[in-house]
Image 1 (cartoon, rainbow, N blue to C red):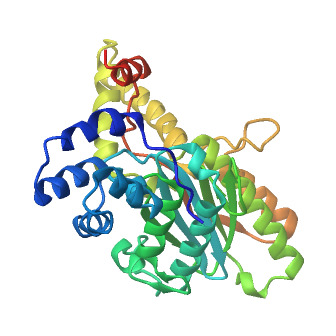
Image 2: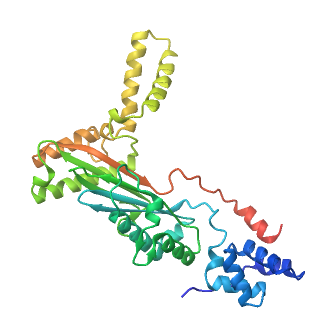
Image 3: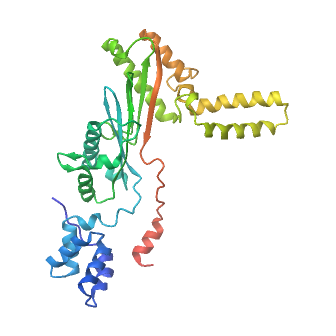
Length: 343
């Protein structure tokens, strides 16, 4: 049952004063819509049901959860959770954003992510890495159209929430391992990652079950490394050409400024470029799992594969962090207190 909260002081003391001049019905609709953020039809229905009493109409909107959800869509939703689901052919990620971390810990919010993950897994596999959010929102679930289900949860948690993205990483015959950072529910956390390991000499499906389990555990450990080290690319062949050109320009300018001969400059550039690859390429990074800290991820995986009697390589990864790329709203609490106090 939806709880009814006491009206905000701002509405009672300030907004109601705007209705004291006996405005027309159209003015009442406009003013209450601005105050509550609810839809025009809902506002008109509440006003008509309460004999055009704005205070009672506002209460009615709040009881129906409509005012609570109003005017929140323009707020920045940069918190939330990433959900991850795995099948034999790949791994699905969904990111659901909320305004606060508090809502991310709400069971209704977490259940919503689980339902979205299930719906995404049942959709046709995308040709690329991203699913269409428009198509996902239109999926019919046992609780109704997914976009409507999301709207219902928004009313319950009283925040702006949104389905930001759904991403798919195919296993392509390999074995995927997953890791969820700061997990607060099964398969849900602030960062989720999957790494795919493949056998070069035999099909993964032909391996013994125990060996497959060992490889999956190894992939999960590499996923943990990936969350910590934040690689941008799998290997050197996949480094974006524009990013590489920009890095080379910087490295060459730095080296040429040293005044050394051209042949020495090229050696300096090559050495620093290798260091760049170690920073941005997963397989070139120093593996945090290596006790001596010397092996690269590629070497670490190869060594682990030899112990299992297989030739292992890293063939894919995907790291998804909740809220990445979203400019979070900087809150000035002193200004908020002053505004509340009318200062």
